[in-house]
Each structure stands twice: as structure tokens, then as C-alpha cells.
Length: 183
Image (tube, rainbow, N blue to C red; front, side):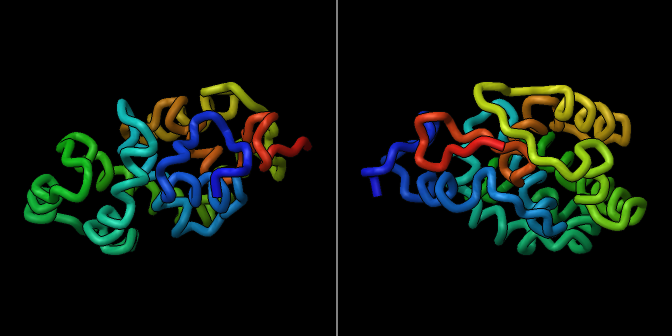
């Protein structure tokens, strides 16, 4: 498993991270359920490492009803309290509250555009960007600004850039990584 050269950020001592790097990161997946899960998880990354979030992903799935958008949109104060006490997830109350608010806005965007991917395509078109060694770009700036204008929290340009990499709209494997490819 370790014989392949991978991106320098990939912790080779963490099998979850290797699996994520090799089989998920930068791979186009535009299913709304996946797009939703990744947006919520990326918003929890703010100020933390992705590895921290990834290690808690299964606990997040359990705590957030398998990222059922309609259920999360209905979370009440009792569920907020339960989430803030769940040791399996990141218990930042501001991020938890934002995750529910962001869910409602995500649903509004889906209703407006037909899918969240259609919303993202309104910025990105039908192209995949191939670039490395960046943390923001004009695309992440524009999407971040629009999501913030709509009321989302923890969706700064760096978080949105990481999100776009995660879902495969930006392909960023390092040049010495076995997954590297160009446009």
C-alpha cells in the first residue's frame, strides 16, 4: 500500500487517509447526497486538518442521520444539544449550528437550480480545473462569496477550494503522485 508515491499531504500511516487519497479525492462525484456530505464535512474542517475530520467521518454519518438533508434541515434545539455532546464528532457549537443553517440553504439551492451540481456548474461550467499547489482561486472565491451572501457559514474560499478538490471539480494531485494527470 505504501510503495506508491502519493501527494505529500497524505499521511501514509493512516489507512483511511490513503483510501481517501487513492479512491475519492479529486474523483468527480456530483451526486447531491455526496456533495452535501462533503460540504458539511469540509465546513467542520475550518481551523482543523482534513485528517481530523476524515477520522470522524463515520461518527458524523451516524450523528447526522447518514446526511439525510431533509432530516438535518429539521433538527431542533434538542438535536443541537445532542450533537454538541457527541464525542465522536467535532463538537464546536458554532459549526454545528452552521451545519444546520447551511443544510437549509443547500436545500434552497437545490430547489432553485434542480441540483447542487447545477449550481456549481453555473460557476464552473462543464470543465474540471487541473492545478496544484493552490489553496484558493477565482472559482472558489466566487462560490464562497455567493454561499456567504446566501447565509452559509464556514465556507471561506479556502474551505470551498478544498471542497472543489474533494468532489472532483479541481484536480490537484501533486506532479510526483501516482494519481497525477494533466488536462
